[in-house]
Each structure stands twice: as structure tokens, then as C-alpha cells.
Length: 451
Image 1: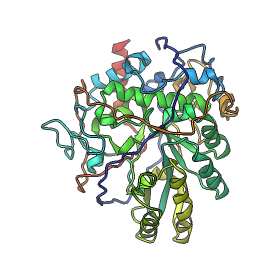
Image 2: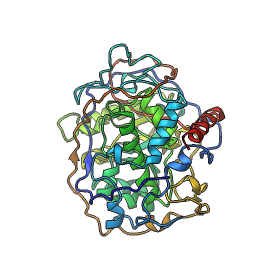
Image 3: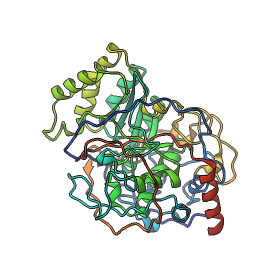
Image 4: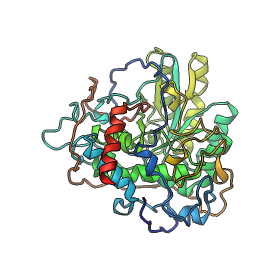
């Protein structure tokens, strides 16, 4: 089903992100109750079942055989920088077109704006309207995760893997803390050693943070698919075939269109946050360790409803140290720390696997698993290997912001429920995917029509 891909050159530089939006206004919080248990992997007729099949036989064989993480073969399979949506697998394009044809993707045009400013929508598109529902403007789409349950703090870190991640992973392991890592695709390519530490040593949860950390609402719908798809592809290939269930949009920049693409094409739930440590500004004369300590004290000694999801990063030695310095406050104030993907109450970070180490099921939805049986209790030969062949970047490079683009060809809108709050800020979040059977039927019909 996939077209043959052009094998790309080895990745050259890691991406580090942050010029988050400067304003951080307080917004209304809502207590989050754990969601009921439900089927947590997609049925065979959902688009995700066909999106992640191996498109290059030279890269991997069927089943659980994958190239060694960090090897030249592994590295060469992925984009060097911003992915070209024209060259991505045809099945990803077909899935987007099917979702649009089924009326599942709102017709919200891409935004424009300066890198450090809130996104600007075209005339007639109110970012707080149900049609648009921009997370940057604090509008909450149904199903997106912003808050943890009462008394719970979700532990998660953006922008890895990077060299500073090593100290963080050792600290987490020593303190028996599970975390979610929202990984950037090119940083996985350039830092395979740290990636393998997160998977093998810590057995932490891995989620999607796009390929090069762009402002997602500025992209065409096809480019949104490329950014998310390639990140899911490399995580799948490098974790024994696991398909992530969660993503976090860079800068918290998502809206009804972008989140619908993540959900309908890739089965992803969006995770935002309800507090921002601003630790990403520690190296740019923004915040200070003292300011972070004050905020952490206030949040962790304050009300336990809603629970906390704090934006933190494994971006620099300073941001890692800030987490370590304030970590004792969690236990001292009676908070329950969990990996942030567990704040939905299901403890299922992947669509097709039991946790980070359990059995991988429904192999037909995985890359390269065209007809292979489920991969039982494996992290694959890739995940258990060492990363010795690929270069490890020690100096992250900030990627340029994506340019504004023409309006999307999407043809439908949803009716999210905006949450009143500040009209400026950066944020990102999501909730577990539990689509009704009618949605699956629509997509299945669309796929049938497309052949």
C-alpha cells in the first residue's frame, strides 16, 4: 500500500525548541476524573491499521525485525530535517483524504504570525469559537487532556532526547519515578543513546512531539500528517513496534483542525498542561531557578483539584536541575506522581501494547507487520541493542519557524466546547482516544471508496 520512499542521508543536527509564547495568563481549571476502561487499540478497519506498514523492505523485515537503533541503516530511513509531505507514504495521504471526505477534519485555514506571538487566524475565524478552538487561546477541545485527577501530578518532559537527558533519566530511575517523554523525531535520530536509555533503562513512556517542532497550526494538513507520521514511524521502529497513543503539539499550538488530524489519521490524544514552569527560558535570561522554585512551592502546596500537569523540559542541564531541585516537594505535600499519559486513568501509553514492556498486540496496525502475528512480550532487537554507529549531537540547533501556508482543503468542522479563560498563552494537551463506532464506520467506508 505504501509507495517506495527515497532513502535520505544521515541526520545532521538535533532540534531544540523553545521560543514559547511570552504570555502566561491563568485560566480556568476543571477536575478530571479517570476515564472508563474501553478498547484502547484500533480495530483492523481503522486508518491506523494500515498507516504503519513497512514501506522499505531494505530497512526491515516483517514482524519484530528492525534495524539496530543508531545504525546507518536505521538513520537513513528518516528525514534529515523538515519532512517533505509530497514524499511521505501514500497511505498517510490516503488516510487524511479519507478523513476529510468523511467530514472528520474541520475546515480551519492555517495560521500566520511572528515566532514569539500568538497565531493569527484568517478573518472570520475566532480562535475561541467552537469551529476553531485554539489551545493557545485556552480553548479546550473535548477529549484533550489539560488536568490530572485530584491529588495527582503528571510527570512529563518535552524536547528530548538530548545529552542533558542522561542525568534526568538516572534521577528518575533512582527515585523510581515513571515519566512520559514527548520526543522530537530528529532528536531521536541524533541522540539514539539517550533514546535507548529512556526505553530500556527507565522503561518510560514515549509520546509524539513532532519531527522538527514547528508551529502546527501554520502548516497545511498534509504537512501536519508528515510531522506526526514520521515521529510515530521512528518510535514504532525503535520500540519493538509500539504505536504511540499520545502527542503534545509544540508551543501548545493546536486547534480543531490539527487535533482532528492527529486523532482521526493517527489515533492520537492531545496532552496540554495547566501550569508552565518556563524552564525552557533558563538559558536565555528568562526565568530563574528561584522563580521556578517559588512557582513550584505555590502549585504543590496549593489545592489538589485539579491535579497538576506542569510543562517541563529535558532541554538543558538547567531545566533538568530545576526538576531535581523541586522534586522533594511532590512527596512532602502528598501528591501522587504518575507518568503524564496515565492521567487518563487507563495506564495505556500505546495503542497496541501493554505498557512499555508488555505484549504488543494487533500487529497488523504496526509498521512492517503486514501479516505477522502479534509481537509477544518484546521490545524488539532494535530496542535492546546499543547505539554505536550514529553520530550523537551535543549541541542542539533551533529549527526555524514554519512559514504561513495556504488554507487547508479540509471540508468540515466539529463542535468543541470552548473553556473561558485568558485569550493569550501557550499550551498543549490531549485525552485518550475512544472514538464511537460510527466514526470508524465512516472512515472504513471512505477507505473502501478509495480502494
